[in-house]
Length: 221
Image: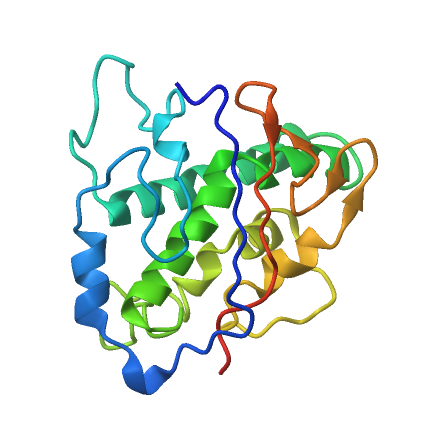
Protein backbone atom coordinates (compact mmCIF):
# COMPACT_ATOMS: atom_id res chain seq x y z
CA UNK A 1 0.00 0.00 0.00
CA UNK A 2 2.88 2.31 0.78
CA UNK A 3 5.17 0.95 -1.93
CA UNK A 4 5.12 4.12 -4.00
CA UNK A 5 4.56 6.66 -1.26
CA UNK A 6 7.21 9.35 -1.12
CA UNK A 7 7.99 11.22 2.05
CA UNK A 8 8.32 14.96 1.47
CA UNK A 9 8.68 16.91 4.65
CA UNK A 10 9.75 20.52 4.60
CA UNK A 11 9.59 22.10 8.00
CA UNK A 12 9.32 25.79 7.18
CA UNK A 13 9.34 26.71 10.82
CA UNK A 14 12.95 27.58 11.48
CA UNK A 15 13.40 28.84 14.98
CA UNK A 16 9.72 28.50 15.87
CA UNK A 17 9.67 29.13 19.62
CA UNK A 18 7.66 26.86 21.83
CA UNK A 19 7.29 28.94 24.95
CA UNK A 20 6.98 27.16 28.27
CA UNK A 21 4.42 29.69 29.49
CA UNK A 22 2.08 28.57 26.71
CA UNK A 23 2.49 24.87 27.36
CA UNK A 24 -0.85 23.09 27.57
CA UNK A 25 -0.47 19.47 28.61
CA UNK A 26 -4.22 18.96 28.27
CA UNK A 27 -3.93 19.68 24.55
CA UNK A 28 -1.14 17.14 24.34
CA UNK A 29 -3.25 14.50 26.07
CA UNK A 30 -6.14 15.23 23.73
CA UNK A 31 -3.89 14.85 20.70
CA UNK A 32 -2.34 11.68 22.16
CA UNK A 33 -5.78 10.08 22.47
CA UNK A 34 -7.00 11.20 19.04
CA UNK A 35 -7.66 8.30 16.69
CA UNK A 36 -4.88 7.89 14.16
CA UNK A 37 -6.06 8.10 10.55
CA UNK A 38 -3.76 6.39 8.11
CA UNK A 39 -2.95 8.41 5.00
CA UNK A 40 -4.01 11.73 6.49
CA UNK A 41 -1.51 14.54 6.91
CA UNK A 42 -0.57 15.58 10.40
CA UNK A 43 -2.19 18.90 11.16
CA UNK A 44 0.82 21.10 11.87
CA UNK A 45 3.83 19.28 10.42
CA UNK A 46 1.80 18.49 7.26
CA UNK A 47 3.30 15.05 6.86
CA UNK A 48 1.77 11.70 5.89
CA UNK A 49 2.75 9.09 8.48
CA UNK A 50 3.62 5.76 6.84
CA UNK A 51 5.05 3.70 9.66
CA UNK A 52 1.69 2.29 10.77
CA UNK A 53 1.35 0.44 7.48
CA UNK A 54 4.70 -1.33 7.64
CA UNK A 55 4.63 -5.11 7.88
CA UNK A 56 5.08 -6.32 11.44
CA UNK A 57 4.89 -2.86 12.96
CA UNK A 58 2.48 -4.00 15.66
CA UNK A 59 4.26 -7.32 16.03
CA UNK A 60 1.25 -9.43 15.07
CA UNK A 61 -0.13 -11.22 12.03
CA UNK A 62 -1.22 -9.03 9.14
CA UNK A 63 -4.86 -10.06 9.46
CA UNK A 64 -4.86 -8.91 13.08
CA UNK A 65 -4.41 -5.44 14.40
CA UNK A 66 -3.68 -4.28 17.90
CA UNK A 67 -4.78 -1.84 18.91
CA UNK A 68 -7.62 -1.98 16.41
CA UNK A 69 -7.96 1.81 16.32
CA UNK A 70 -4.60 3.18 17.46
CA UNK A 71 -4.22 6.75 18.61
CA UNK A 72 -1.56 9.21 17.49
CA UNK A 73 0.18 8.74 20.82
CA UNK A 74 0.26 4.96 20.49
CA UNK A 75 1.70 5.14 16.98
CA UNK A 76 4.27 7.70 18.17
CA UNK A 77 5.46 5.53 21.07
CA UNK A 78 5.50 2.34 19.01
CA UNK A 79 7.52 4.00 16.24
CA UNK A 80 10.11 5.21 18.75
CA UNK A 81 10.28 1.74 20.29
CA UNK A 82 10.85 0.03 16.93
CA UNK A 83 13.41 2.68 15.97
CA UNK A 84 15.31 2.08 19.20
CA UNK A 85 15.21 -1.70 18.85
CA UNK A 86 16.46 -1.54 15.26
CA UNK A 87 19.51 0.43 16.43
CA UNK A 88 20.11 -1.90 19.36
CA UNK A 89 20.00 -4.86 16.96
CA UNK A 90 22.99 -3.42 15.10
CA UNK A 91 24.96 -3.51 18.36
CA UNK A 92 23.91 -7.08 19.15
CA UNK A 93 24.82 -8.22 15.64
CA UNK A 94 28.33 -6.95 16.27
CA UNK A 95 28.76 -9.26 19.27
CA UNK A 96 32.04 -11.12 19.14
CA UNK A 97 33.60 -8.76 16.59
CA UNK A 98 35.88 -5.81 17.08
CA UNK A 99 35.21 -2.19 16.20
CA UNK A 100 32.19 0.05 15.93
CA UNK A 101 29.06 -0.47 13.89
CA UNK A 102 29.74 0.87 10.40
CA UNK A 103 28.11 4.09 9.25
CA UNK A 104 26.67 2.24 6.28
CA UNK A 105 24.70 -0.05 8.60
CA UNK A 106 23.53 2.78 10.87
CA UNK A 107 22.13 4.68 7.90
CA UNK A 108 19.48 1.99 7.37
CA UNK A 109 17.56 2.34 10.64
CA UNK A 110 18.10 6.10 10.77
CA UNK A 111 16.39 6.48 7.39
CA UNK A 112 13.62 3.99 8.12
CA UNK A 113 9.98 4.97 8.41
CA UNK A 114 10.12 4.07 12.10
CA UNK A 115 12.81 6.59 13.03
CA UNK A 116 11.69 9.34 10.65
CA UNK A 117 8.01 9.11 11.53
CA UNK A 118 8.75 8.91 15.25
CA UNK A 119 10.56 12.24 15.11
CA UNK A 120 7.73 13.82 13.13
CA UNK A 121 5.09 12.65 15.59
CA UNK A 122 7.07 13.89 18.58
CA UNK A 123 7.38 17.28 16.88
CA UNK A 124 3.66 17.28 16.14
CA UNK A 125 2.96 16.59 19.83
CA UNK A 126 5.08 19.55 20.87
CA UNK A 127 3.51 21.86 18.32
CA UNK A 128 -0.03 20.80 19.23
CA UNK A 129 0.58 21.49 22.90
CA UNK A 130 3.09 24.35 22.57
CA UNK A 131 5.21 22.44 25.05
CA UNK A 132 8.85 21.51 24.80
CA UNK A 133 10.11 17.97 25.23
CA UNK A 134 11.03 18.52 28.88
CA UNK A 135 7.49 19.71 29.61
CA UNK A 136 6.07 16.53 28.04
CA UNK A 137 8.41 14.23 29.94
CA UNK A 138 7.31 12.64 33.23
CA UNK A 139 8.32 14.81 36.17
CA UNK A 140 10.11 13.56 39.32
CA UNK A 141 6.86 13.62 41.29
CA UNK A 142 5.07 11.43 38.70
CA UNK A 143 4.74 7.73 39.47
CA UNK A 144 5.92 6.83 35.97
CA UNK A 145 9.09 8.94 36.21
CA UNK A 146 12.24 7.05 35.24
CA UNK A 147 14.77 9.52 33.88
CA UNK A 148 14.96 13.24 33.18
CA UNK A 149 13.70 14.28 29.76
CA UNK A 150 12.29 10.90 28.75
CA UNK A 151 10.29 12.45 25.89
CA UNK A 152 13.42 14.28 24.66
CA UNK A 153 15.38 11.03 24.59
CA UNK A 154 13.05 9.57 21.94
CA UNK A 155 14.67 11.63 19.19
CA UNK A 156 16.28 9.26 16.70
CA UNK A 157 19.67 10.95 17.13
CA UNK A 158 19.56 10.40 20.89
CA UNK A 159 18.43 6.80 20.42
CA UNK A 160 21.46 6.26 18.19
CA UNK A 161 23.66 7.79 20.90
CA UNK A 162 22.19 5.55 23.59
CA UNK A 163 22.31 2.35 21.54
CA UNK A 164 25.60 2.77 19.69
CA UNK A 165 27.53 5.45 21.60
CA UNK A 166 27.47 7.59 18.44
CA UNK A 167 26.71 10.86 20.15
CA UNK A 168 28.31 13.42 17.86
CA UNK A 169 30.25 16.49 18.91
CA UNK A 170 27.58 19.15 19.19
CA UNK A 171 26.87 18.49 22.89
CA UNK A 172 23.14 19.09 22.36
CA UNK A 173 21.08 20.25 25.33
CA UNK A 174 18.60 17.67 26.52
CA UNK A 175 15.73 20.10 25.97
CA UNK A 176 16.68 20.70 22.33
CA UNK A 177 14.68 17.88 20.79
CA UNK A 178 15.89 17.94 17.18
CA UNK A 179 19.52 18.88 17.78
CA UNK A 180 20.95 15.32 17.74
CA UNK A 181 19.09 14.45 14.56
CA UNK A 182 20.15 17.75 13.04
CA UNK A 183 23.79 16.77 13.53
CA UNK A 184 23.24 13.34 11.97
CA UNK A 185 21.47 14.93 9.01
CA UNK A 186 24.72 16.74 8.17
CA UNK A 187 26.78 13.54 8.07
CA UNK A 188 27.57 11.90 4.74
CA UNK A 189 27.75 8.12 4.44
CA UNK A 190 29.59 6.73 1.45
CA UNK A 191 27.34 4.99 -1.06
CA UNK A 192 24.24 6.05 0.89
CA UNK A 193 24.07 9.82 1.17
CA UNK A 194 23.45 12.46 3.80
CA UNK A 195 21.70 11.68 7.05
CA UNK A 196 18.66 13.74 6.06
CA UNK A 197 17.77 10.73 3.87
CA UNK A 198 17.12 12.91 0.83
CA UNK A 199 19.12 10.45 -1.30
CA UNK A 200 18.18 7.34 0.65
CA UNK A 201 16.83 4.16 -0.85
CA UNK A 202 13.78 3.17 1.19
CA UNK A 203 14.29 0.01 3.23
CA UNK A 204 10.61 -0.76 2.93
CA UNK A 205 10.25 -1.26 -0.78
CA UNK A 206 13.42 -0.11 -2.47
CA UNK A 207 11.84 3.15 -3.62
CA UNK A 208 13.34 6.59 -3.05
CA UNK A 209 12.48 8.04 0.34
CA UNK A 210 12.84 11.79 0.13
CA UNK A 211 12.02 12.44 3.75
CA UNK A 212 13.69 15.80 4.19
CA UNK A 213 14.23 16.28 7.89
CA UNK A 214 14.99 20.02 7.93
CA UNK A 215 17.26 20.10 10.85
CA UNK A 216 16.39 23.25 12.72
CA UNK A 217 15.38 22.74 16.33
CA UNK A 218 11.92 23.81 17.40
CA UNK A 219 12.93 24.26 20.98
CA UNK A 220 14.69 27.30 22.37
CA UNK A 221 15.20 27.02 26.07
